[in-house]
Image 1 (cartoon, one colour):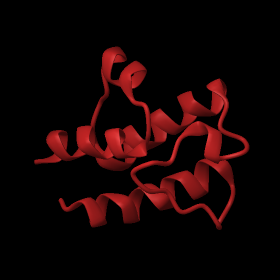
Image 2 (cartoon, rainbow, N blue to C red):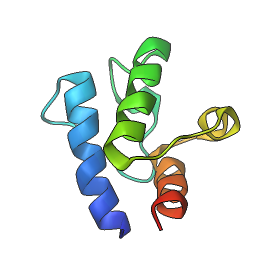
Image 3 (cartoon, rainbow, N blue to C red):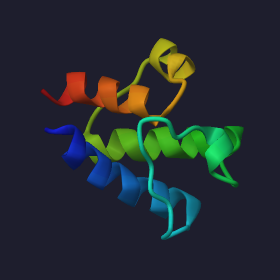
Length: 80
């Protein structure tokens, strides 16, 4: 799965979780960039991403993600 394909699917997940059709994420997107992205929504987002891609993140990966680009890196290694 290419980064572009991952981003296409991630944008759908983010838009669904945050109920905002205008969201477009990229490598540098963080919680500071999305108004409703708080700790509770972070959990919902992680679960939605795991379900969308059929992957599971471990706690170290979840805690270590500093931006969406790092999330994409992890997804890429898990779906190959």
